[in-house]
Length: 188
Image (tube, rainbow, N blue to C red; front, side, top):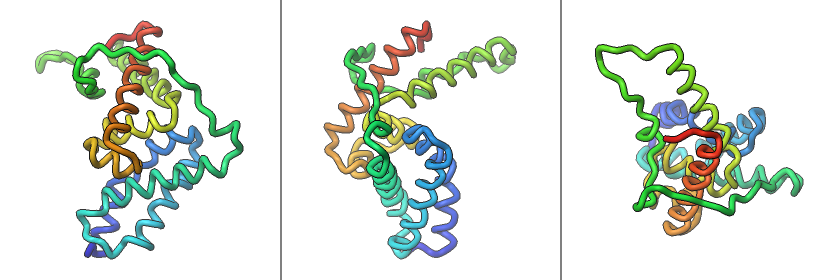
């Protein structure tokens, strides 16, 4: 059973990532704040007595459900997302590690120039914009796998789908991001 202190520390540890993930999903800061707050309240009210080790998966599932509930309450035209029909992948295994691909090649005796820093910041903004344009389920799977660093099984449980669906959503998201970034002249 999680103590009140453990629950509080857990919620503090996930609040920023949960907020960022929610903003990616709903594209509205105020709504994202509401979703995160609702999901934290539900975790505390309904699952605060669960073991501390179970809190991360429970919270991911609750956050996903609160996000889906938000979309259900919106007018249909607000919930539509563009579909990406052409996907391309350079990797054979279908895996993608955003942090690995953005790893800056630096030596310990060199510092990053202002130009390189500005270019990297612009690239990250472009990636962030493209992540927001992904269809909802692809974005959800992508963020859980590569932002939250959940494995396929944990992501499947949190999304309420099969592991195969998670792999498909992630693969399509990576291909769509790759294609969109390549069209903007960004190669990772």
